[in-house]
Length: 225
Image (cartoon, rainbow, N blue to C red; front, side):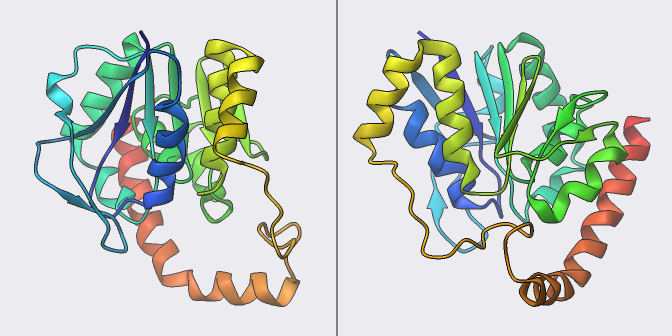
């Protein structure tokens, strides 16, 4: 029986969590935990509330550790207790994974040094601070570390991981069961494909948030060094 643990935290992006959760729960014999510091409800960045199933400290070991992203990542980059738990669980895991800006938490835990990694397009610039090698892709696998791109890439990454664990036949059955047959209305889900003016406008809106995140990354990277 494979044990999966997904990190819950205030301010996470719910789809970063729920997309891989849906896939993991369909794995044969899977035991899937939502873990946080305690068992108190946790609200996502847009107010959806989740119930942790277990405190991080009560998890003895996991086969798969998954770290989602979201605005709440910023505060956790310098949360020594959470970083220590990520390091502890990662040490015994078969796969250490992330979705979106969850990769920055893996970086802050020293798990991306010298590894190829991806994250949300707006956060790629922060990966080198943790010794990671920014690499484009819906997911990037380097050894036992798999990082997923932004938000919706959580489905792609999770299906890829499930293939690693159970083979293509199981994954194709899961993909069919959840009717994952994407046909987006616009081909603009990444700066490489979106209209230039739109990308520039979004980047302009992110300036303040990027500055705040950069400050936290600098502190986290300094502690890691």
